[in-house]
Image 1: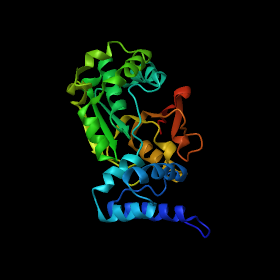
Image 2: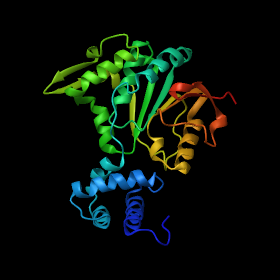
Image 3: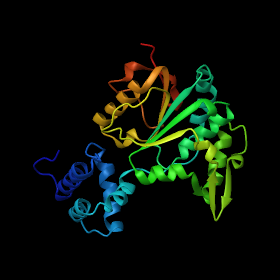
Image 4: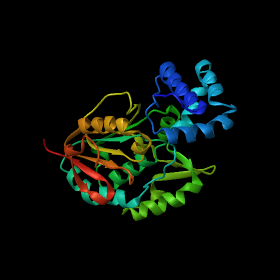
Length: 277
């Protein structure tokens, strides 16, 4: 909400975000303002606008501008097996519990261009769980979902992906899961054979399934306190009893209204377990 004394830039940002919500129902109004401002300052010159007001005018009158703007407002920076120790903890600490279920549902929230989804699919394949698991990969950016569903990544990224996979306790060679052509790595479509890709907003949408594991990493850091609480409430309500929640290294339940619904399962990796209420 703007206040008396707000700068012209702050008022423009407020009006731009309000326009984006009212016209297209993309709600960034309660994202951390410093982060949004930084991204909009990057977007304006690259999209050809001299001010946030000019960008707002284009957004209101040209629907084709929206996906271009979303690429700046949603974070699309990730890598396979990012923070390998997190995936090692999933493999060594969480998977033994997941093995007890005859079928599994896993929600990758804010899946971006699919690196984390493919990491989980490979890990579950190596642990013999892929065939009994249904993955939900969700994001608000249609372009990101399309990229995730394609399973295609630049070949120069594979060296880092491979190193992360090995550090995560990988039981095979990452090269077993992709083929190369024209400077790109194309990951095997069987990794996505049990994946539902869906447009879902943690800001405005509701719970859609009961799952045994939610992994939402490096998304909450871009939300204000209110939105963090809303998202964590969705995760709590989505998880089956004793289900697991994985957050990013800079995220925590410590000051959340929903902290009492969880216990710390692997504290150093920000993996929590829903209490058996």
